[in-house]
Length: 272
Image (tube, rainbow, N blue to C red):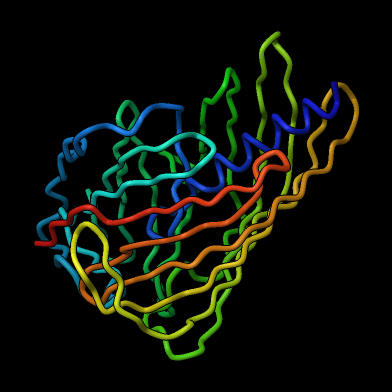
């Protein structure tokens, strides 16, 4: 029973964490569903404050153009939640940040980002407010994040550059039979620039910056009075194209002691 519970906990944490930062590469499926035949319609972009510039300022980033209404559609295959398509849209901008809205086939999420002197930083795990929630295989997990530090994507990525990003999380996993597991933990990631190369995806061929990402999740979950330690680690390669954004990622990790590889590719984009 405990091994089964631990596997369920690991599954939930992987699904939530891999949906943390779509712009950082690797977006986990929020639900189990087949890959749609066509891309989902793009979520409407809010007009935002007309006094805020469309781009530039603190939010200016060559590898991730922060512009009101910019839209990217991706396919994700090989993950534990199945294959799917999703669309990212920048739906609101502020002088010191922006809102990234993600539309799945039957679910929409928003994620707040801050624009800082050093670069762009995701403030949440990928849902409205400070909470990320997800449902999969009869389980529901809800997490809040705090103590966000580091940078998701530097303002200027130099050759060989390294940087880090981390956060603390607290939450609860609800399982069938009215069972719950309280949890606290940390998520940390180290990234490094690995050169440039030409990458071809359905949206086209791009000269891209290659970034190696290594992440680690340390969680203590309490279930029926017993502490269940969970450690999940993985790595990914992410490619960004100048003036376009995130175009591809290949993520390798374990899902309940079963290795998997998730490939995410840019299908189309529209940048005003």
